[in-house]
Amino acid sequence: MLSFSYLAVAGLALLCHVSATILQNGQVRITDFKNTKIDRSAYSFTTYPRNATEISYQGRWDSQYGSWWSAPGIKFGYTGQTVAITFGNMTSPGVLVGYRIGGLDWQFTNITAGATHLLVSPDTPGSSLTSPINPWTFELRVTNWAYGVQIDAVHVAAGQKLIRLPPAARRIEVIGDSLAAGMYTSYEGLSSWAYGVGAGLGNTDYSITAYPGICAADQDCWGNPRGQVHQWFYTSDTSWRASQAFGDNPEPWDFSKQPAADLVVINIGTNDQNSHNNVSAAVYADALTKIIQGVHGKWPDAKIVVMALWLGFHQTGNSYFPDAPRGFVNEVRQTVEMFNSNEYLENPVTYDGVSKKSSRTGKKTEPFVHLFNTTGIMQHNDIGPQWHPTDVGAIKVASHLLQYIKMTFGWELEATGPEVFHETLYWNDEPGY
Ligand SMILES: *[C@@H]1O[C@H](CO)[C@@H](O)[C@H](O)[C@H]1NC(C)=O
Ligand SMILES: *[C@@H]1O[C@H](CO)[C@@H](O)[C@H](O)[C@H]1NC(C)=O
Ligand SMILES: *[C@@H]1O[C@H](CO)[C@@H](O)[C@H](O)[C@H]1NC(C)=O
Ligand SMILES: *[C@@H]1O[C@H](CO)[C@@H](O)[C@H](O)[C@H]1NC(C)=O
Ligand SMILES: *[C@@H]1O[C@H](CO)[C@@H](O)[C@H](O)[C@H]1NC(C)=O
Image (cartoon, rainbow, N blue to C red; front, side):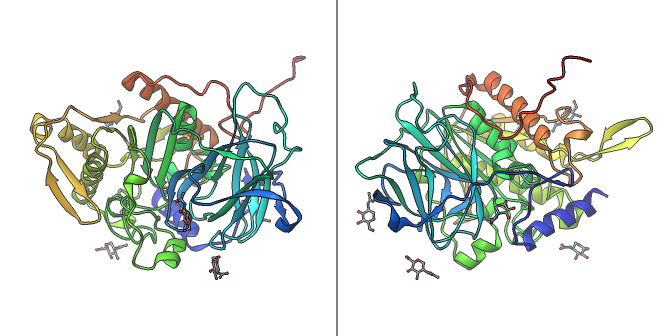
């Protein structure tokens, strides 16, 4: 049952490249996607090229300023009350992006390839507020993993300027599949638990290298030609869009483009454990091991949290129970234990996914791999009919993980107000029962 449905789901997402309406329990959600496209020649702007140092790129972007994976974005400070962006012609037609000023709620708009969009004007809510936060900051994120934008130029009002924001004090990377990418949540990447952890920590830059259907093992899984043990080392994901853009020569990710991550959360293996993909336990454990060694090689000081996997639920009699097996439980635990063994810590190994070489670092290390057990966080109604967390399920995973990160690493939760999950404000205001 699970494997059949998962097949239908992941396969559909990979093959079907038309945009879909947001459905909420089968009903069309009423959305307010503003039409922000303008005729650039009718405006006088101060324009910055896409490589301006004032623009901070979040997540993975290629050498032509095209975005990849889940919830990639840009951030900058600005003066005045105007921000417009010209998008390159490699932008996915109609791609939905979220954008916001400061810590206000997200707004959404569909982007036209090659067009200029006016995203902030004096009429934009929040644009003319006086604020304790200076300068005004602008952030944009792509909602869907399979689509992307290409930045061509950023504009502010004539005579105004962009301001470079310092990198956040902390950096987090999430490596995963559809579960981390936000598949089947309302705003996809911007409703995912991975985003919720990054944005919920506050004062943290985050990058989500997750793609639906992908395995840890380097083989075809649900149409993804490569696994994370290979693809994580590359700029682009395993989408059809990436194969069109790069063919067989994707750009290796230049890890020097961004500061090292302090914390890496890995949630990978749900597709490996699915019998459809024929990944043996040994091949999965080897791939997970190499991903961890890869992270340790690129970012020697990063802490790593490996998440135990979860599957769906079924009803038996008058209650609900998790589907068994829960997915490579022993392999996940044993891999984490291996990394914490004295033998390993005395003589750790790193892996490079581009050269495919493992090497001994010859440098003793402190334990850096942690296991986050997900058992008991989600209940049967936190998983939607398409076998992925609902918005509520994603928020539960994010909340527990945030608390785990706080308690394990002493990271304070610094997002103390700014809207994180869009359209999750629902309540009962009926006092008179
Ligand atoms: C805007 O994006 C949403 C979400 O992908 C999509 O359902 C809708 O069709 C898009 N609208 C336009 C006009 O492209
Ligand atoms: C941006 O690109 C232009 C054209 O390639 C180049 O001349 C300029 O030096 C670059 N600027 C920065 C800040 O890298
Ligand atoms: C896309 O933009 C680039 C750079 O402006 C241009 O050279 C190229 O011809 C454009 N391609 C298409 C298909 O419009
Ligand atoms: C999985 O293995 C079975 C039996 O060896 C084979 O029939 C099937 O084609 C394989 N599936 C994939 C996706 O490789
Ligand atoms: C997570 O906890 C459950 C229940 O305590 C346990 O059965 C399972 O083995 C644990 N998972 C891992 C990967 O250790």
